[in-house]
Image (cartoon, rainbow, N blue to C red; front, top):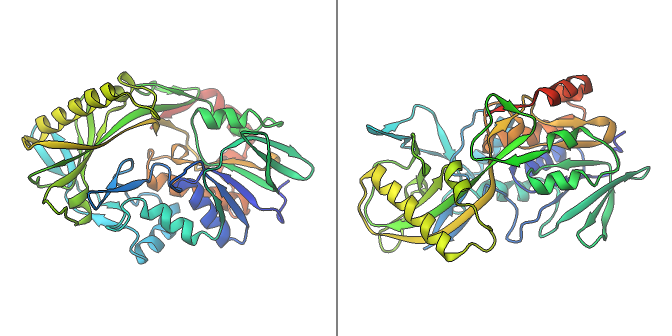
Length: 379
């Protein structure tokens, strides 16, 4: 039974976790968000400033394709935290082809980080960063959270939301002294491509991101790369945000394919220099081959996202285990594929379920058991 007078603990300060907190506050519930980030919240909606320009080094674009998230996107747009991106399309054998879809990104001040920054400022929740929740435990007083040293984090909490995935989330849910629907939903493995037609667990990919500065300009802001073994997306931060660098160069973010990421995977916190050189050289060559851009490229940043993008999904917006007062949210739980819009939609749905505003399909334990047996489907 959810203790309505106790705050909700949201473990994970990415877009789905912050959207949960934002919607919970709107519905009158107290919330505390815990995130491992040292530089701040945001997860894959992260940016940094390079050569004075906001540079997105994970999520590059999103669509407003999820009705559940539209109230949040309207608020973000009203405060100019997000904006439309023109000249987005695909790069194929015939060159760049403009897309008919409408794409969005952050703003010229913070890049894509403007989304989590706005949510952190406006969600009304207490937020603790650089905090690693290592175990959770339920008793008659509520949920108790403990850090890596076994020290209890001030609580208790009436509900726990797991707003992240990967091995850490899988290990964390296994510390719980109650078997929840979150256990099956958080099982995962890392693969170069999704299992067809489905899998019995979440499958995650690894991606490399290389940020370069180069002279010259191209006639598009971002492009999804067709049938390339190395690149899947290229995005021009200077064009996307309408900003300029003092020396006139453009700053591009190159995103690898999952197969390339898996083939070159290494310790992401201490990437060997030889891996950085190999990966950046290969990705720059692929960029130049696809765009016919021959200008010199300076590498500004190389990053490996070890658990970057979900490759499969389940057909519900969130997991709501009311019996055990525990939920799971994230972009891999939403039909339509992973991305910022799906993350926001899942967070809003999670808050609605906790507050009793809506009952997602996964609330039916019989249905959930059947889904667990049939597996995740390719996103």
